[in-house]
Length: 244
Image 1 (cartoon, rainbow, N blue to C red):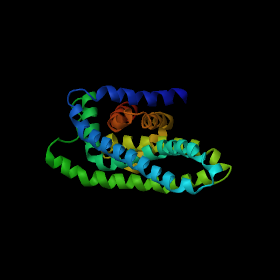
Image 2 (image 1 turned 135 degrees about the vertical axis):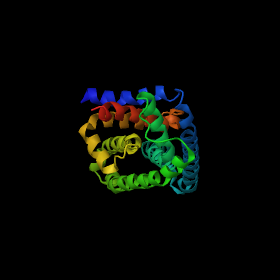
Image 3 (image 1 turned 60 degrees about the vertical axis):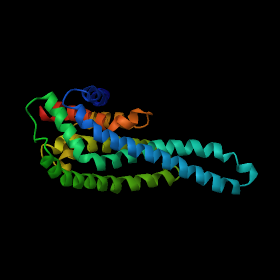
């Protein structure tokens, strides 16, 4: 199990090495811009609105409870990092889905030349746009149906002790599904079949997803995490499923 988790994590860093190869770096520009803009806006909105809430409601508390400001900010930061950055990454994928598919194709073609599944003209991009967005909505529905009940565990006394651990495992699994979908959908593998395939090598997938989740909380690196994850998941697909 430990070895499989490590191998899954290693795919992420192997993907990073591929991003600046000729024929690949062109496809990371737009996803990178989308990710940067969404993360920047999300961070700005989060800090702004939370500051307003603190300034508005904290003065209404008795003087002996004013120390709560020192507790609320760390709690906000932890929640923002664990849940906010993760949700922001999912939202970025919704907008960048067609371009992530082309990035996955470019990475795969670099690893195994001559396996390109489509051309790179404008007509191909337009044809991929609607199916890619529909697929992202499907994945978003899968996430919501499972995430909302899991988030409720955070407010149940006793159970909320293990809720963060369950959330991290769930997030790692969903990120593995999210990014493995790009290379697999290029080969006509539907989302339900994708889930079955990843369950065959669950810990490798969790190793990749967990590493991606960790990178979302690393300053600066989190702006680049989406193309890194797409490239890493593509390498994983080629070596773990395509060649078997």
